[in-house]
Image (cartoon, rainbow, N blue to C red; front, side, top):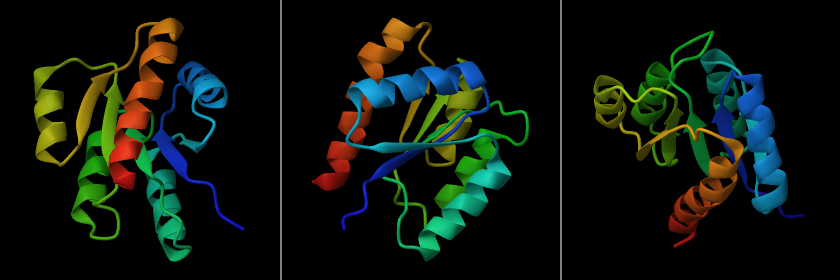
Length: 138
């Protein structure tokens, strides 16, 4: 039985999680989605999934988390040979140039500001996912 590919999102805002799940269910159903609320849980999850040979196709990270910092998790992911090849996108409400510079310094593949409303999320998010996941398949 083939295991369905999935996208990991590290996001602690319950409203954002609900809206992203809705978009996944309606528009990106070829991928499962896993939402984790903090950096410690996400790193433990990645280690376990590496042992199972089932890493995510894409990682979405928020910067500002209640527990942990997405930039520090990004640095950890990109410095670990087991995870560094996974495309990792920062999806944050921060538009600060220093956050963007730090994210690219640590190896993020793309930095995106969170959509301002559901329609923007619904219209743009599937294109972003398709772009990065298509690159993986090529």
